[in-house]
Amino acid sequence: MIDQSKPVAELSTKKLVEWLIYANNAYRKGSPVIDDDTYDQVYYAELVKRDPDHPFLKTVEIDNDLGTAKIRHKTPMLSTNKAYTQEEIIIFIERIIRHAEGINVKAEDLRFRITPKLDGMAARYEDDILATRGNGLLGNDITHNLERGLVAIGGKNTGNGEIVIEARYFIDNLSDQFSHPRNFVAGLIGADTLSEQAKEALENKVIHFVPYQTLTAKECTYQELSTQINALCEEIESSCEYPVDGSVIDLLNQAVCDELGSTNHHHNWQIAKKTKGETAITTVNKIKWQTGRTGRITPVLNVETINLSGADISNVTAHNAGNIKNLNVGIGAKIEIVRSGEVIPKLLAVVKTGEDAVIPHQCPACNADAKMERDFLICQGQNCTAQTEAHLQHFFRVLGNIDLFGPKTIEVLVSNNITQLEKIYALSENEFKAMGFGEKQSSNLVAQLKRSRTEAVEDWRFLAAFGIQHLGRGDSRKLLKEYPLEKIIELTSEDIANINGFGPITAKAIPISLKSKWDSLQSLLKLEFNLIITDQKEQVIEDNPINGKSLVFTGAMSQPRNIMKERALDLGAKVQASVNKKTDILIIGKKVGVKKIEKAQSLGTEVMTEQTYLDLIQPI
Image 1 (cartoon, rainbow, N blue to C red):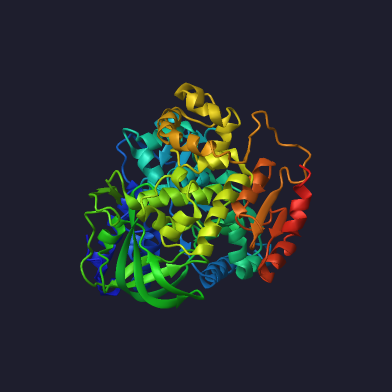
Image 2: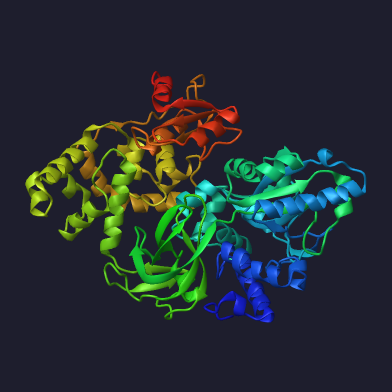
């Protein structure tokens, strides 16, 4: 290990390389000591700047030995060289053009292909054997994972690819337990004994070996690549259903590829374009620890306010307790932070040490013992105030048809020992006023509670709001398409396992978690919520105008956007995060930028207002 509080520029090259090897090994075991951005943009970038011909940069970054049989690859499996800026891509293109002209291939005849850079574990499926990349020459036989439930997309012997998890499944089911999807996958593939989460993911068929040849690709000229690289990569990455950390650019002219050749580390005709957000240096003033709904205690760094990507930043996410410990982040530390697009800024590296890192031994909300589990700090309390508040916030947020019951309101309720939903719905104006709410505010709160009972809401959304383990919005909808809400308490694990999309482990856990929430759920049902009942025989109307279409919602809408998205999914549409070539309709609310509309129109995407869209689907 190195002293990470020491500025990277002050490390000797020997120490820097030792740290890169150590961090790379930890990353490939699924237990990273620093995140990918920090590895690439701080430590790896320093070695490239200092000694671009160092042997470490010329060899494949080695995967860990998993202890299974060694497999010799027929051709080497190499790493991919990386670029972060338009300028680096142009240098890559100019080098290719020079070699092309040297064998009489014109620049305008060059063709490039862009594919998503999957954020998973590299592997090769050949001669009926699935093997890791290993050191590029020798890998480990991991074929037994196919018997465990790993899905090989495209069938057998499909060549090079990546082992990944479906992004949506990870977000819905594992993001509160694991810091990164790749870490989860790497741990699963190399494990002798599978965890319950790994068994469940395999049983749900969401862990895939994805051959590169099956990925959505876009071809372009060198001129397009030189001037539109960010837009082209964004289009490709946004259409991928798996976690990605950039795009891979390949030259398609074989004669030029042969001329360019390869190093021991990478092919010279291929490069990965990764996103590098804007960075800045600031100082840590305070570290705030927050307890969430699942009991996980996470650090937020309060820093000296600094403008980054057009926003004034005073709070930075530090990922988890393990990251604070590994990077030795303390009060007074000078840190480098990064912000990409509109996402929350995050800690990238420690530039100069401050006080030593302090990991709390107690939950900041309830003072119960806190215990480290992997890189996460977990509250061990049974009646944690923060967890109670987070559960209540989750209910009102997912229900989606009520305002004013945000964190501040919930905090006041819990401080007055109002911790059950049925008690909240029974509150009168006078009781709200007695807790310190103003007269008008108290009246509005009661009105909002009435609104949430009388305004129509889907029964699956109502169920999902209770935070029952393994019953998020998607799975709640699947369950209620088979059984009515009032009957689900009677379901056995076998009943649930027989529903398409539920694995045995999930099926076993749901009845237990459901039982713990059932009294509260029944109490609210007695309040006669206006539930839209899921039709157990519901089918998508095949000829409805958005069935099969790809939609993007943007701007301020007249109703919660998540409700609009779920309705679109029910009607057979696909909902995307951003506009790309496959987008059919962009639905715009208020305050939408002109550039976003112009981009959609340039791609041939239909642009319609929210009201036009609602009129379109209203008869359905």
